[in-house]
Picture 1 (tube, rainbow, N blue to C red):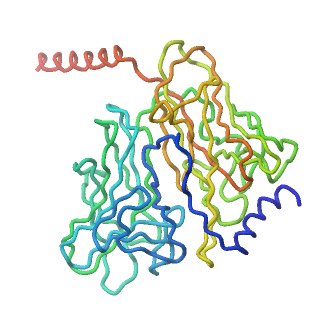
Picture 2 (picture 1 turned 45 degrees about the horizontal axis):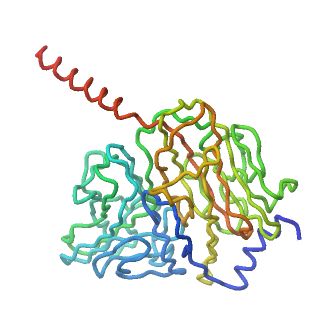
Picture 3 (picture 1 turned 90 degrees about the vertical axis):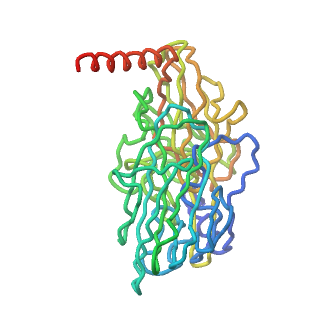
Length: 412
């Protein structure tokens, strides 16, 4: 059996065995993403299925007997996920019970501004149902989306995107999505695909951080690609198709209903396990432009590729755990021992702890663990290395702003 058939064979094995493997990591040194499970993919419900008031599950806490975690097709009409297979439904049926879902944002940097976006739509089922208005808050303060704190999503086939920014005031914050509990009649809105990123990241030292070049015109994949700033290596580098460690992926190259959609743009990189051949695979780049002694941070989006078979309600999910190093030194995410990225079934945003440049040129390396099964796949997108302003620089910026304000007052 050739390498490509081995990969595709995992989908056929799944069809035959209908085995559901839900991601439960056994690693103790896991890197901390800003928001875990942003696509409501955990716990996996099967298909089509829904769970009323799932309580605390998959990093989220759901309140109200009408809170609903569902999978595409479970309710009829336009009840589909924005990305992946599952969604959160805010539901009100004429009572005063508030329906909500809340989660903790972690590893935030106080003073840094982030972008938060998500998709939402009302339920298109007729019979008197309308969209359920809701609001999104951070530590109890409502966020504004295009000047509005109340969101009443349109009833459409596709999700409508809502975006805002917020500035972190502490390393953690509670994010809450909730309706008002007073909507008359029957109302339901779907929410999915939460995304987080840096709002003002600054100049990126990484070349081709979103893996958009070389560009591919069709749904395909390239293995062990070279050029465009990155070097891709794997044990099976001699094979041009199939089972390889890394490459550039666009859309769904394997044709087995995966969640492989780039976080941004058209392309992304992936790391694939090398077992039974053994060894590791890696993606690396020699990054230049560092200032010795200056502090920097690394950020990227990562998810584990998921394969789902809805007819049997089963799922094969195996993200491929990996580590990140700078010139051989481990990069940490939320603590000195938080070095292993074990991506979930939806893109999660990782921002590293600060690291100090020791040279003007340093190697950035993503590498999976040795001997991972070939159906373990991690995808990576939007890689960036940006400078962290020194405290003195921040003070100077604040001083300049104050001086400008005083000069404006004098002129008045």
